Amino acid sequence: MDSFGGSGTTGHAVLDLNKRDKGNRKFILIEMQTHIAETVTAKRLKSLVDGYDSKVEPYETVPPLGGGFRYCRLGVPLFNEFGDIDNAVNFTDLAAHIFFAETGVPIPSKADGNSPYLGKHGEKAVYLLFAPGQEGTPREAMGNVLTPDALANLPAPPEGFEGSRVVYAEGCTVAPDRLKSEGVVFKQIPYQVEGV
Image (cartoon, rainbow, N blue to C red; front, side):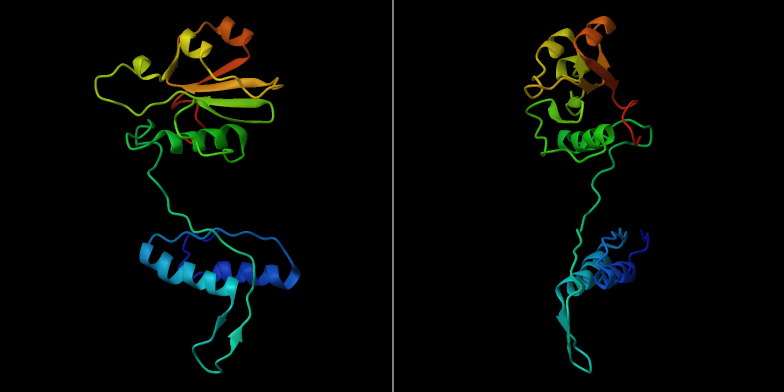
């Protein structure tokens, strides 16, 4: 990991080493200046991966190093300075974070907010009850609380699933005995979301 990605030298070195010994090393470069990240760092890495024709003497074709990289931009921080979910956060972004924090793997498919079911991994089926805040609307009315009705209406996990259902919500009004009998683990947002 290189916190000062700049011209991409660290990425270049990793790609070169991987080509030499058929390794599978990975790298993360961070560059705060968008224009540098796009026009210098990413451009250099793409040229190295694909190969290029040298523009200076001795004007030769430089063979590709192979490999690859993914260029990403950071989105809105999920949590504000008070540890609460930021008002600008949408369901899709929070769902991806929660699924990864709970299971250690990326969400199987992009969540669109039409269903609280995010997916399953191993012995966990993960659910999220979340609608971004609207001034003056009670959280329970927005669907952000695990109520007995909300529990009864949770989509069933895939057929044959025998693990636990992990439900993230801002609150819970379901009795602990009922949660246990239905194989449900409640986790409160934002306090029990890893990475806060």
